Length: 343
Image 1: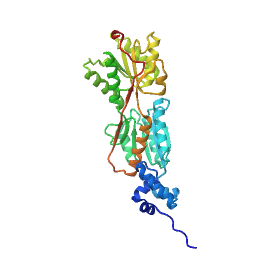
Image 2: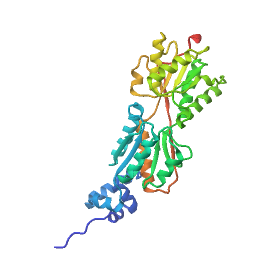
Image 3: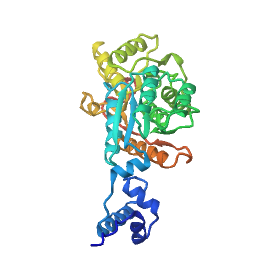
Image 4: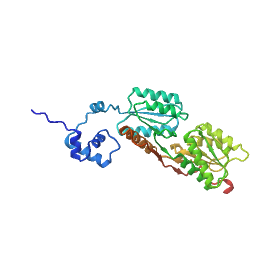
């Protein structure tokens, strides 16, 4: 009895009228294929009875299907949301994620990257630690057998793919909103201006003040940790000034929550005696009393874009570097209103 010849991807390509490389991308569940083309190729596979041998394919491609991801401070709801979005996007295309929380420690970050060489990962998604030495990181990545995509935090001059959101425009939106309400002395609270994200937010803050013709007072730009305790402490610092602000734009929602707690500790009511804006639109933000005016981002889209960029880099290592900056929106709630002098 003559054995029936196996169906190959060349047979699929000919029948579906696509290239062999397109069929290969569909087999590997790459997001780079248009939905209609993917549907046609899958239908042809079913029609011809094509069976994909994953084990043999893995040996041929030397791909493990494993992606490494390094983030900072998973106790922070922002990083938890970011991690969940990236992992979900990669799971949808049948990739497994090896995750670490390096807690803003560049040495832990470097050790994780080195360790991933032994795990034969296909790529790395990295939210770099704040004090990352770009030169040292690039030296380490050059010798690594996998590509890297930055997420949430860019590294100036790194030449690496990046996906995040527009921190500068976001902060400008928040400050412009406060200015339109009538606030003239607005504090910028939390984060470090020496980091890329902090610098972008600082730039947006200053741009909004400059566009409105307001005086720039550097003493209102107060750095601090991204915690509730820090928010309370930073509020005390600016309210004890000779001429205190009437509003604060916070680096994230967690700091804003601390500011709101600090206001109540001083007998002041957020949104009435003092306006507060946050950043990230955590689920908790809408549940506070008053609900927090904050900048919202699309975590799912960040995850999808990060996964897409990394897979594109894996498929084509020499392709042009891409920077994806996603838009932000300001959700106006009850923590902001006109200062009492304008009421």
